[in-house]
Image (cartoon, rainbow, N blue to C red; front, side, top):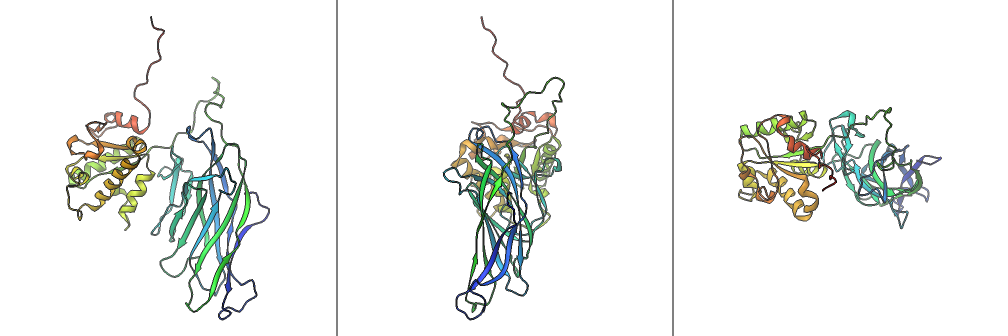
Length: 397
């Protein structure tokens, strides 16, 4: 961040009624939000964006400071605007933290091939880390030029202190300077008789960007004496959706998840995330939208729920998951058909897949044994590495 001085937005209350706060005309300063140094790293841009955009992973450090003895904040919100460079504004591809309706533990994230920040358990592949937080967080503006994070508290007021956020930023190709407009909104917890107006003064600064990495076409090929080793790509992120028909099927789903992880796939499922109370519907939606692939396991109950043959009051978790998948396939089939994979585990039938997954007219994947060598077709799809490559054309006759 190219700025000689600290970037700070002061939080000021102006007394409009001249009853409760007797201050100078400029109001009373109740605190400030200050920006620290930002971490900025160029990342490889997907091939379908490369001609027009460069992409960067940016860590945004900010700190809320409050004056002692004054009313606490019920919420505060920072806004980071990258869109002021019209007519060629930058935009935010993804951002952290995602919405958090309850306290969150410390988490690590990696970038998938779609430039989405997704949770990872592999420390070597993590590119971003978020500390644990007790804030209730809402995020607005992903996919646009302005990103906003709103912090609130369900009890008392929002605590002061340092916080971090991350943004995957796409800027017009070749841009090395990016204007940033920084602003803060907030509300004060106080007696209703207090007649005040919260104010703030936005600030602007210039973010200096590093040179983007060379594209694969532009990079020099290694000579025979140079090492051909490259950092390993992040493992595919897979979410497993399944029905809890009975204990046997639940155990088989767990064995399948363990098998995927054994084979190098970053698999996620509910049996590993049940250590605290939470909103399972939001949990599933976050995984589905973040994952590279969602696997649906065949079973009689999965079929019944997917085909709408159960009471709406039963199996609500699976109804929510399959309803979300059905909606995504309906609204954007081109994107989601390759990402939603029907799988038939040992002892199950393809007939027990929901019809909206089209198990007969499109591919499904059988697992005859819980072994990596037995799921090579599925692994080739998850890793996007075909088992066999098309040979070159011969000279003909």
